[in-house]
Image 1: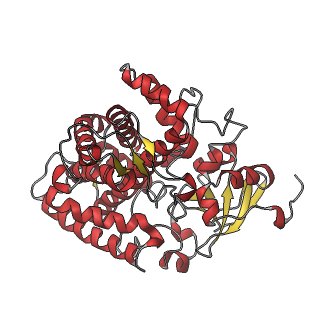
Image 2 (image 1 turned 60 degrees about the horizontal axis):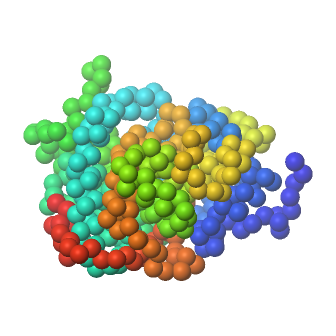
Length: 428
């Protein structure tokens, strides 16, 4: 295709872009589907925006997840990867390693993080969902991010991991520092990661002496052919399950509710289906919300370990590659009416949870929490409505995730409610 002048290229990573990146991604898909750019951190990377190219890149073994294949200085200063993970000795998790270590660790973690364990957790997720809604249902208004979408996955993953109830507020505070990215005090993310690492190490030490039915105990027990998770590996895996498991679900719920409020016809169809006790539209609807405005905008970092070609573009050794899931999942070459929210969409192989060996291991839990959140909100607060001009809403800064900072809503207050505020004691 003919080269496009730089002046024609829409700006990336501005506040306006954060509010609605899809027009810019559509331009890139058409004109520069594999685009080299300078990120806000100063790192130069390739953005892959077409669906077919994205699937290829996500499954290509020449694209390593190990930051050691890129600039040591860039990673040490937090310009690639998760801020603070290197200093906290939390590198050996599934998002940062390749086979054979990845194969070994994923097999071990899968023994503990089983579909049966997630399914058995459904009553607790429903209990948390109801109690959080109890906290604001009688008031007639709420910020669904801070009062619902944020605490629900934090308390859920803490329960699943086996974090004692009395310590979960600390986790909520640390998670808040991490999710704000650049919005908090300088160095806050790194400090939160270090505190979480120290706590997890101490918790793992305690649990070794008294194993329970929780996920951390399962990680400790997990073994394969005589191989066991080391304490560092167990801490790193617990950390990444928390880190990757909570923010994705915050955004799935927040972005999903926002999309429904902006598409009243689709929301009405879903509400009617839920009211009839049907599950089919909810199941396809969760997948469509993941495609339409998913929680992960760009897949996590990959680094070329040998020269390769993506979409006709040569990628040199060592270069970072970022697969733009948000762009791929609106590629008209793969999805009909790509910019339309269609909760009944059946042909929907979206990339919201990735593809290949790094497919999100926590996807079943995220889907479970998303189903519980949407079903309960739409059932208990049937006239839920946006309480702000969409133009006034702000999206969190950050390279990988996509989510709202707040989501103010109004609704007819419930006549009775189980609590007056969404305090921690209401959900423990």
